[in-house]
Length: 410
Ligand code: GCO
Ligand code: MG
Image (cartoon, rainbow, N blue to C red; front, side):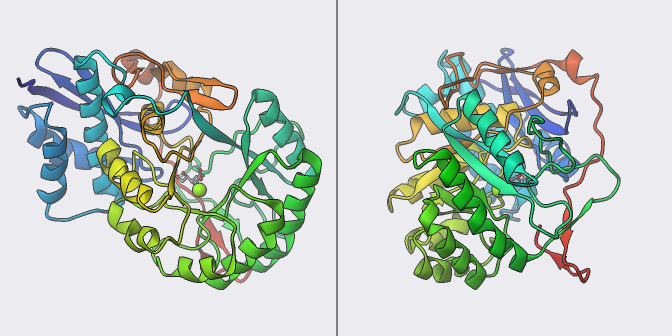
């Protein structure tokens, strides 16, 4: 039984933000989609796919998912890295989409079937001050979310991460870090001011919303190990679900120091792209959630390897799901979330309505849980006519500078 790949197309469109989508079509006309969006560096992956992978894929058997993954990973000689792994992920997800369509099943069935009725998701809430933060949390509660990520402006810091600059009180949260501009926007940072401010914010949120609400926080790689340890300790009374990416990700040993000082759960990994990035973190049980994405960690095949490895140590999944993961990437994540045993939580930053003009989805949200739907495959269709209305526009993630001008981790 074989189903040969007839065409491999790289689709770049920008319905409210840039997305790169891979479309693989078999000789029988079965279409598979994969998300290849690497925020702020989109065209590098588009070229990797178009110029280097597409010629290798045409004529191959679309059924050979594992073999194709190994062929692209080992066959490049140059291993890992966000561009390569995002490209491999797009191919992998498109092939899973095709296989599930051929089986006439939603993808989660091929991954072992549903282990739960839906995937718990967390939404974002943010504010320039406590009253606007509370408004933002209330909006999320009204929408039905049970888990909420809390970000706030840091006193004295212009344009803090995660907070929509200049948003009026009560405005709907629509934070999008990548800005359509020829240059990166510059933001500020001050770790000392942040460390002084944050515990009081969580104290206020706990007092206002009670003990049951699941609260998360993203540190976005900004602290030294000892600062991260202090943050974790100071947040212990407020019972966080996790603190995310507390230190820059390259140094796995940094988390050992953090771990020795705090019981606040630790999630890390949105910039990781392979199981190797988790080797010591998992084996030494330095973290509680592996928080990579289908899109940047080698697809369903790559991420499942990471989740299965983590499961041996009771470490759970925490799939990265910001708006730069396209609806195709989110759908893929939801199928995996539903199927694996060690699921923890899925991030959900709803896409703008324009994005849904291009991507027709069948996933649903109800009572704080998402479900990928029961369409064969991923359950996402791509509308070329709609996409043609939204041309790619260069966009960059911000950079952060300290008060004296030094570049800091963003
Ligand atoms: C998150 C992230 C995002 C990233 C973005 C970069 O936890 O959702 O940290 O906000 O900054 O995905 O492309
Ligand atoms: Mg993050």
